[in-house]
Length: 360
Ligand code: FES
Image 1 (spheres, protein in one colour):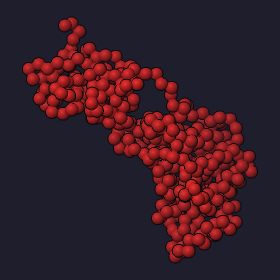
Image 2 (cartoon, rainbow, N blue to C red; image 1 turned 90 degrees about the horizontal axis):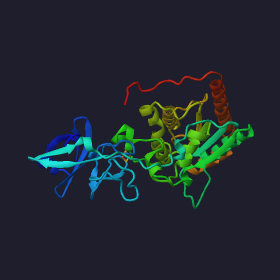
Image 3 (cartoon, rainbow, N blue to C red; image 1 turned 90 degrees about the vertical axis):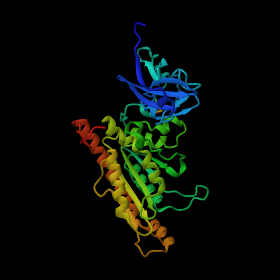
Image 4 (tube, rainbow, N blue to C red; image 1 turned 60 degrees about the vertical axis):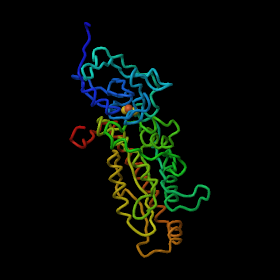
């Protein structure tokens, strides 16, 4: 019939041997499925973030996207029950002389059910007001039996000093938040790691939301505190850091810088060793996110390799005036640098450096 465009996409025997195949019909990429001998063809591009549906799996009659598991009916293209209005194009299919033919001219329209953008998705605009300092505590403790934490105590001194200088302050303890580990979507494809984080988009109660909100939309300076555990920052720190890939990845895949004119500084308290190793990782990571650093960007304490009398570490930190004064001065240095960056931005837009020359 006029307007039809039946295109051969492959051998029926071969395509029937796999539940789902990614194929190309001229320039149209398709996810061709076969279940109980019945073929279906839908667009290969997922409605969510363009994931390759043909590389996914079949769940009954639904194609499951390999990136974040959205589902579309393999024959109609409709979203799973409750999300039917989210529809990918579906195409007529027929088998002739052992070949699978798809009419690529007769695809149904792609429709996306309107959804409110996630609140984190809003443009990053610094609201007027005093310099805002966020304290991020990453120590992991038994919440039911809290005890003294040297890194938390120094963080409290840092925030108190910033507040005394007129800064707004906020403290977030990762230990109080319930949040999932990164699912490694970035490892599937660069574009599978989205902003806001795909985990956050799928879980309205994602506990990491206040951290994203604080880092991207609220703070001018962040002070991250951590204990040293086996020569590294705390496990909670790394659980958060992996989830912050979503911020760094926006620079890589969209040339979109979410962190501008912001400062990061660190408090590191260890029983025995490796202050500089921990600081190096934290500096490198926060540099990748786009933060600047004040001169001498961390305050740290460790009594050395032979100090197995751990109980005396906390006493040393609790009683050390230089450490508490130093933490306060660190916060003030960070706040002052943030103010300078904002002043300079207001005067003459600060050009950001590029990174990673290769396109994705
Ligand atoms: S679920 Fe398909 S791209 Fe996210």
